[in-house]
Image (cartoon, rainbow, N blue to C red; front, side, top):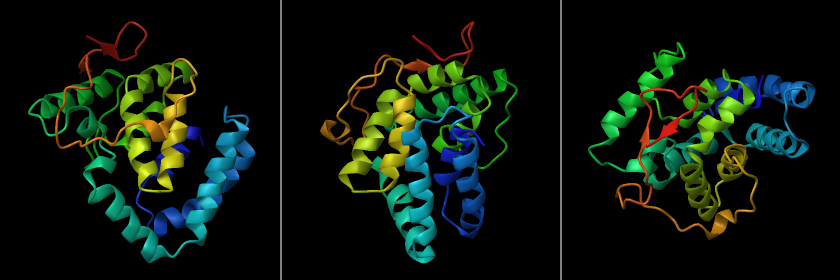
Length: 210
């Protein structure tokens, strides 16, 4: 299991199915992590997250998940919600993102929207390492903002998404996540410019900005 597949699974709803998979995920982290390109820090964070989830009360974990991601807009796992808000352009952006996946032979057949972060990570897991990083780099500002919002709420998922944010950096920099102002994704303040176009991949298959 790659880092991205593991992160995708752990960010899903913490139901009985995910709990049943935790031993296998932990084994993969310890046995395949280094060979799969995970750093010691990533393996430590992922295994710690698994252990905390395994030791938590199932009903409490499920309720916390719903309250965090489904009932709090600024914690949404749908990334264009932070990028565009509820602006009328969000629909076309989702269509463009779906078309982008199709350029790679990936059809979105699940009920989730194409900007759902766990689904996006499943897609990244099919790409070469550098190509996946280029793909995620176009979402770095959104990921950074999401980590800031979750950190402010003392949410344990902040550390998990923080690992993804670090992998999305094209240049390693010391970014203070907690200092990033909280966002209101229900309003499009025009902060995420230039707009991103997903309809066609570049010659290298990465996202292109206007």
